[in-house]
Image (cartoon, rainbow, N blue to C red; front, side, top):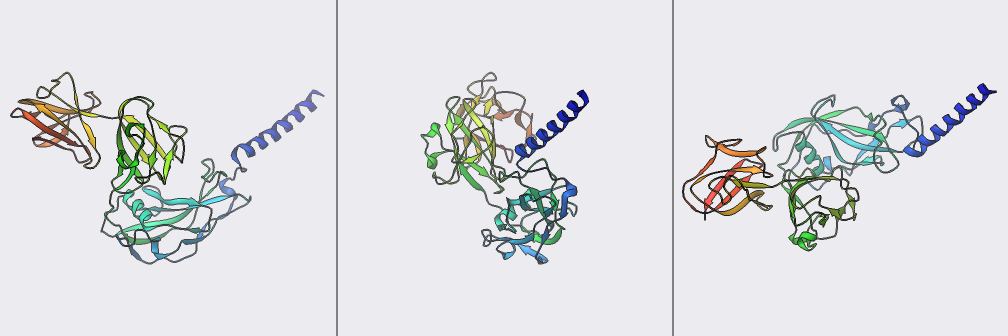
Length: 351
């Protein structure tokens, strides 16, 4: 009797586990061996393409979309299709997804999105390069996003030459309590290469200060968050972890964002605080640099991050260098000191 009970218990537990997996994942697991046929691209590509300023908003290859025959699985499951490109034929390294995943058999890719992906792969603007393209199909998690638990299926790859356009900076904005919720006067986050990843800086007056992101200097398209990491359209207000400057990185490709304390200052015997206290700089989004106007005396100074010597810059043999030599100020006066972190340029100009 005990043996029969154990067998029945095992069967019931197995049924419960099977049902739980189906409920939690939305669909039954589909293993790689369950792919009956891989996706197929139903079109021929030209030998070369050029992306320029006049066609950025048009569909890639002058098509209304790339038509495909989707992958077929042994189980009827929802799938998402997306274009992936690479500089290597086997996609083993240096690859990028283009546009958003779709359940449609027609994948629309804009030249703008293709250009951003090419930039992320390191292709040189205005120079012809070679890329490989295939369709990536994944089983949907029934939430409009791919399941991370299941292996994807790929079409055969095609290759062609392509000339990217020199990307122009793109901007989003971050209105909040710190500026009376006005998008027009809010701090801007910049994507230097218009690749969907934006970086900016906000000086929060206090911890818990609320804000959101907007596509333009209006509330027409805005993103918030309920978990402090994932963005949703018209979502909840986001709160700052603390007071002071924070570097904010927004990835609109993945609808995620991250924040960390981030402020630059000058320090040294030429500065008002000497070698003991930083004179804080402010972020100038229009010029993409940190700057401060301060009274300096004859002496030296350096630029450092977050009031700490872990990251600091000086000038050695005329080159801005991490941990470099102290910077000399020859005469006392009021100076505009600037630090372009992206290009490693420090200036100090008598006003």
